[in-house]
Image (cartoon, rainbow, N blue to C red; front, side, top):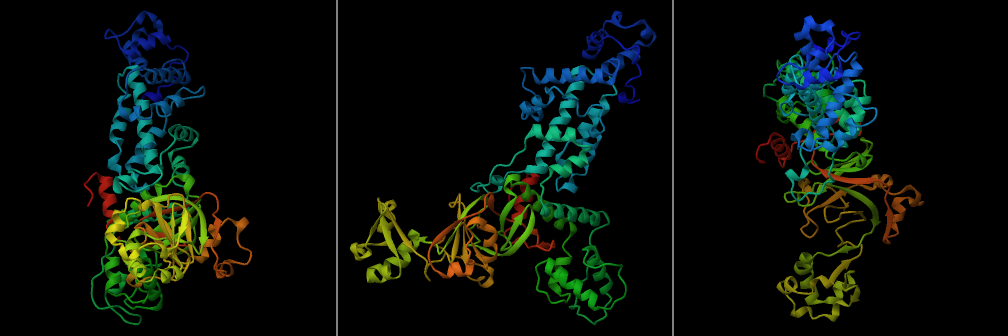
Length: 578
């Protein structure tokens, strides 16, 4: 019989607390039976077992209070505790020492709820093998035997420690971005352990806790819902395999069409069961939706590229969604209310309010093969017609030959030079005696800075964002999408990103109280340089996602061209990074 079912059995004739503690602590001699009422003299062995579990203080409340004292005694001991508790010892101690504190796990259904949650961790985008649910289950089962008070109290703390690990993984992620990108800047995200315990205590059950504790944005919730669907597909044997062959077009009949219908049903792009081998208009529409989901041209034909995308195993799609959820967890909650998210792997941006997509468009990493920016930082302002501080590489390779030939022509193009804050005429320096090597070795190079106001030669375009950490990332206006979807200006920072047709999002970026009354196009047409402050709490986040949510709530899958998912999956599993 489980010990918690025995609570209250001995209410009227319980034992003295001190005697009970004697048995629970274990003396090796069975305890001092003279302190136990004679009523129990014929049930010494049963009483010893019950006292060992601490369930006969006259009521469950008495037992719980006594066990709470034991938990506090462990936490207040001078000894270093096992790491699972020691690393959050202060927060755990504060929770259990509160005046209204009570036990969370012993004799509570949430202990089994936690182990069940860990077993099904894949539904949260986590890995069951990372959590010791078997150890916790064995610890609970051991309560049916003879344990000391310290051992029982430690079971409570063991559950608490592992719960906090799970809660941290659920909200802040399992790995730090710097594990993957040592030079990256991402605000450290962690949990308030005492807040997590307080919320757990106030929740009806673990399911209720998870719903309120996980990242609170629409994108995360949609990804989690789709992840559950993918796991259901996996449990059913995986996606239907499609045989390659000739392209399937509207109006044809083919024996492969029932399988294609079934596969699109599995993607929730087509309703109903597979019926017939005719490629009708309804199927053509679903095929076009599938092409959109997987980033393919919208032909409405089931061509080889679509068949390859549909034949990617469900395990890979699960990996993509789980990794996308992990990256969302990296971002602290306070940064997620207003967010310009740049998906550097897929050349996309989305503007989010509380996780809901408001605007979306194209954004291209500058020189993507060497752009390893992964960051989150505050957007402070937007400058129209920004001035570009010319890089020394551009200065030496592009401008120096022009300065040798005619400094006044360079000056007429808008360039100007400052030394220690004072402007220096370009024709006042002996450029014909200078070389690129001289510029690179000049001991006083830092005193000089060359600038170019808004012009056709200025690569920053009509506007640029001012960020709190501009050395980590810079955002500028890109007139049009580059050919082959690859943009590279070696004279811009390697952490720069160009935003195409980003005018629409500026109305969400600029502080409404100072928004130009004449509208953005008219204000930009004035050609003067002016800076507008951004809305408070607005963040720019740069990361990689091979799956994301569009404005209409549509889930899109990308191709992960730079193997970012492979790097993250390796880090999560403890393998060397690819």
